[in-house]
Amino acid sequence: MDTFNQLNSEENGDVCYAHREELMTKINVTTRSGETRSFAASEGLSVMEIIRDGGIDELLALCGGCRSCATCHVHVDPEDFDKLDAMSDDENELLEGSSTRDATSRLSCQIPFSRRLDGLRVTIAAED
Image 1 (cartoon, rainbow, N blue to C red):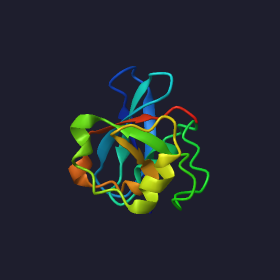
Image 2 (image 1 turned 135 degrees about the horizontal axis):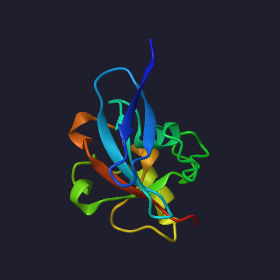
Image 3 (image 1 turned 60 degrees about the vertical axis):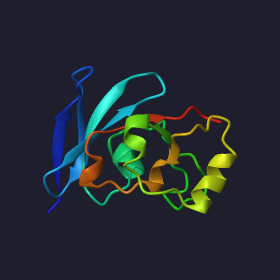
């Protein structure tokens, strides 16, 4: 049975909800306006799914995670970047078309969340 977990945002006291099935870890997401929100995160979901399920609608994710649009582009905190698996050639090619790409750019649909990413910090990229 699906349940929900709430986690208070460290920045502003907002309560965020994310899908959960087991004990969860968290990710920290900074929106385009600079607001940082923390979300409980289930292992096995993509970072894109966690952000979308948390109600941040500025991450469009138009392809739904099929790695065909780059509308889920995020900047990973440099201190967390080395925790991620290597980027695929397809992901790299999609990000090449972004005017806001930097050294820590990733498609959030291509980041599977796991316990080793507990505390992951990402910022939603500006729209191209």
